[in-house]
Length: 336
Image (tube, rainbow, N blue to C red; front, side, top):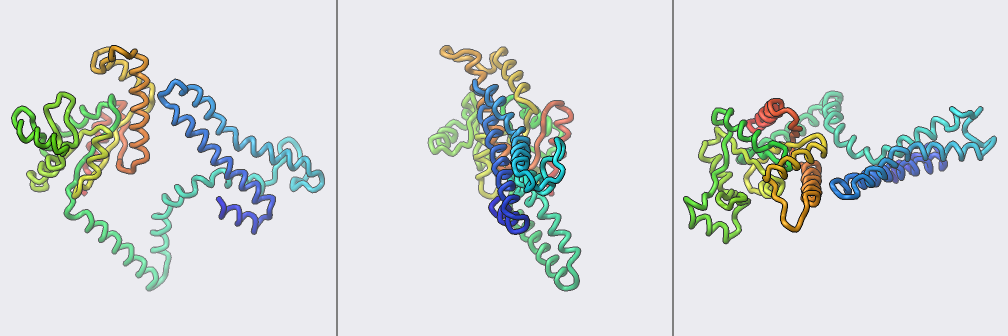
């Protein structure tokens, strides 16, 4: 934003630079009001947060109106000639507003376009310069490939509760002809002493809700090793387990996020689980309190799924068979 202001000042003058700065501030205001909506998801203030956040849509309009009023007060000094209702802002002023408002998205655009410009530069540079740049790019690919060598691929399927990810993982394993398998679990009934020892040492990544089966880092890596590299371990993980798996040394995690496309669908599934007894209601709480708490947890899970950078693929499980096909397609990346 500061760089943009300086460029606008040097190229178009102080007035355009000020308008650009106002546009950049409006862009920050847009992000602020958007955060109000996301921060109040699943809380009692959710409706209020959504209503207030709608202010972000009128910020550019307010800015255009402000510049128009400023121009009208300038009289003959106004940059707009023959001003009327539909012509109160000059093209330069309007461009400054738009570019300033979109300044917050420049880093995202740059990261997305960088590979395109890099490939274009390689093809356009003449002679030895183009060859040198191509060799440098090839070296980066070799280094990346070398970094993958020796790492064990792990397919991490995660998402909030109620998305149907466990059913998807089960079908994926059943229909994979041995390409995908579950991690080795420690059974507290069959391996009581080992289970207690691992529990005391806090070496379990997770223990199931019944307290019978525990998953360890070794259980994931050894299951893959037992297949001699011909199969990939699939982990059906909640967000907390997903965080631990991403820290396993020697694992190349391929993340698939399973979600739904609206909070209303999550709420419907939570209600169904409450009615069926799958989600119990404590004696000192009400259904509404439990529902609100679950929705807040889901919002936090979704935030992790979006910002963590762990998940290369996202599947919105509205139709099971279609979602299964998407999961199978994403899982093939484990073998590349």
